[in-house]
Length: 286
Image (cartoon, rainbow, N blue to C red; front, side, top):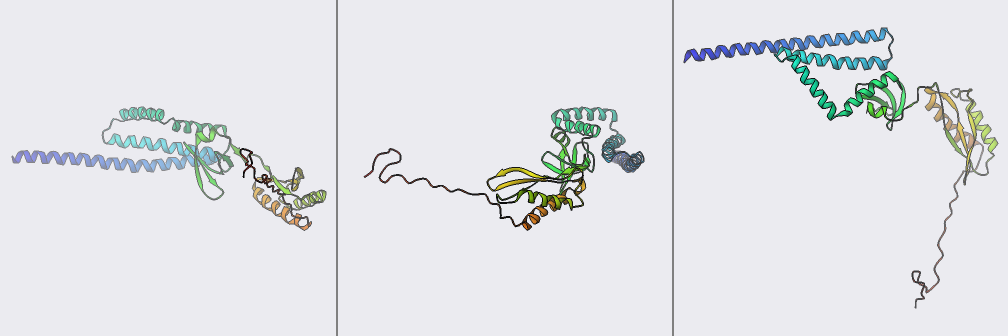
């Protein structure tokens, strides 16, 4: 009896030592692997910076390399525990195909991300409008693109949704046109209003001289003529010019003393039916 207990105890100690050594080995591999991954990623970033690669491409390569190296590290750690890495890799590949078929959107996002990096409809740092969101491109990832909106909210949009939608890139061209309207009353001196606004736009140093700003009659309403006020500016000055032009429209037209433009409203009242007559049947009522 004592011999059996001793035998089981020795077996438990050997098993514990074996498992403990595997755990320690796995921890050592994991820690060492993480150190190596960080070093490789830093080397990749330095190489991209030395080659002056665009931020869009360098961040995409960083994300892809990080994902691939971590998968290889997990397979290596499982190999320390005796899991057949080739078998595990096959199972992982089969599972990946199954998951990809089940959630084709992931593969679609991944493929769209590659196309966006290659075709470059926009890059990191551009201001774009897509999928109902306008913001600064922070990063293009494997599956999603991150935008920082004007109110400071980071928004993540699936790459496939971006690539299949209409993309407006406000940073692609060096200049932009500001489109604003100025409602005038019917009694206004239109040429004088146009000349006043043109002078105000010319005095703004952030408004480009070439192409020259446009101020002209766009349409007529019941309240009076509507002026199109369209200065041109550089991208980085767009909002400044929008605010300054709105202020100029309010201030300069106010100085001219024009009456306030107002839309006339006509109120009609239906005629009262003849006394004693039913509106439905038309018969006289007593």
